Structure formats: structure tokens, C-alpha cells
Length: 401
Image 1 (cartoon, rainbow, N blue to C red):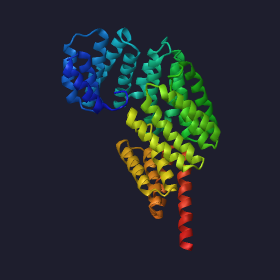
Image 2: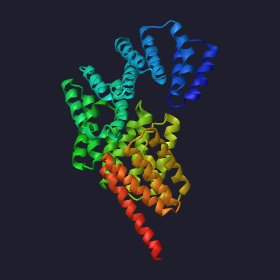
Image 3: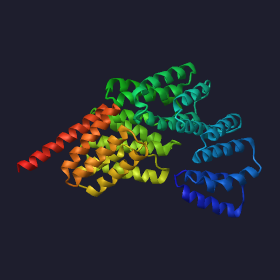
Image 4: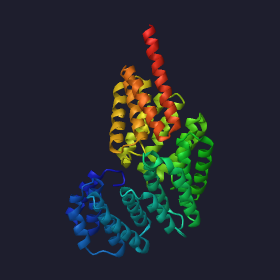
């Protein structure tokens, strides 16, 4: 389960149940089936766990899994009610992991309902007086992942900066320092994608300052976004130092699949900005290894597709570039947005260039620049336009010869 291999977990829990029909093992087996998005297979294990003797904390864990089962079946109203019930039980009787899991369930259901923004702010208001700790870090890290849909989604990116300011005000009223750190990071990300470098640096540095008291198992994202900023502005030594800081966090965080995915994607970008495609390819491969161990987060690793395709294009590896372009296209098809479509077009352009199709590459770079431009992602729009110009020069050079 911890290494992101739910199929193996189902098998192992099944073997354990053959020896002992323990209610908690049934509950864990149900959780593994739900990680595989198989609510029907989870049903008999949930039933068995609910029939077994259970304390209040265990009852809350089962409510949380029932919430997940409900949203897998598309019943969001039931999922929301069960997640709220699980959260109340966890706060009263559970441990940090129970509270964090229930908060994640509420956040995810709100996201599915299109109600994530007010839902998150309501959760922050509940954090008044909450002590720093692992569960708060998990709460913030999970919502950082969901916030990427706000930054990259067509329906949200235009006012995400204003939402971050509103959220910061709520977090300050609640005296919830981790939530303030979350809001500063989101605001910094909005500036970063708009290529407003000074404002992005100030906000992201403030986020890191506020997250620092959480200790080793804190949130990696603001350090990674600062590394991205440093890479984009040519501060290569700073990018390397920030990536090292984020690596220490990723090594111990309970949200490893998010942290490692973005870390390797950012490391690939930093390598390409230094002109080292071989190092970028190593980061691409490390992304795959981390996904095999911890599970995959397509949102947090999305950047690796166009950046990795660029690296493979530079090295003349057409097949590898094509594979990353296909992954980017699949992701953009699952979560349509101009920004993610821009990533897919950029990856496809690099793959076309690697295969010698310069005309096709130029057209896809033009589409990428348009997508990034509509999303307000100024740095990436400019980069795609520059790549289109590079391809046009190569075409002209080839024609002259």
C-alpha cells in the first residue's frame, strides 16, 4: 500500500485473511481495492469489517472508505456526508492519519463537486487552534495537488491569485499558519506561471518560512516552485540547492507520490535550462521509478512530458520522445485545459522534430504557444514561440542547402 502497489496489496491482504478473518485486515483490503477503483470488489470486505467488533476510531476509518466507495460510484452527496462524518469521528477519537484521510476525502469530494474553493476555506476555518503536525502537512499537501487544477484549468486560472489572497485572509483570521503557507504558495505559483518573477519569489519564500516549523515532514511544493523559478531565470546554483532541500522533504513525506513526481519533473527542467539533456533524461527515468514505488500523480508529474520530450529530441531519441508525447496527450484528454493541451502540443512538437518532421513540429509549437497564451502562462508561451522560430530557421537552412 505504502509503495503504491495496490494490486500486490490486495493479494497480500487476501493471504492474510486466509489465515485470520480479521476485521481490520478486511478494512485494509477494501482500501486496496478502492485504490484500484474497484468499489464492487471492496464491498464484501467493507461489509465484513463493519460486522466485526470495532472501536470508534475504526468506525471512522470505515466511514471514510465508504465515502471513497460512494464517489467511485458517482454518488457525491452520500460521499460528502460520509466524509464529514468520518472527519468528526477522527477528530474525536482517531489519530493524525485518520484526521488527514478524512480531510482529504472532504477536499476530493468538494473538488469533484466543483466546490473545492469554498470547501477548502471552510476547512481552514476549522483549523483555528490546531497544532502543527503531520496531519496538517498532509492536509496542505493534498490540497496543493488539487490546487493545480485551479492554476491550469480553463475555468479557474484567471482569478486564482485573487482566491489565494482571500484564502490567506481567512487563514490569518483563523491563526492557521500552515494554511497561510498554503495560500502564499498558491499566490506565488500564480505569479510564477505569469512570469512575474519578483512577486513569485517573495510569495514562495514566505510560504517556505511558514512551512519550516513543520519540521522534516513538511510540504515540498514551495521549495520546488522556487527551484522552477530559479531554473527559468538562469539561477542554476540556486535551483540545485532548492532541489536538494526538496529532496530531503520528499524522502520522509507521507505524500511521496506528489513530492517525487514534481521533484523529478522540476529537476528535468533545471537540467534542460543548464543545457544538459542527458541529466534531464535521468530525471525522466527517475520519475518512472518513483511512480512504480510510490504511485503516480499525473498532475504533479505533468511537466516531465514536454521537458523530457525536449531532452530526447536534443539527443535524437525519437521513440522515447514519442512515448512522452503520447502520455501528455492522454493526460490532456482526461483533463481538458488550454495549459495542459499546450504541454501536449509542445511534447508532440519535440517528438515530431526528433522524427525529422520539421513542418509538423512548427505547427505544434504554434499551437502550444497559443494554448499557453490563453492560459496566461507567459514563460511557456514565449518558450514555445521561440522553439517555433528555431524550427523555422532549421527549415530555411535545409531549403537553402
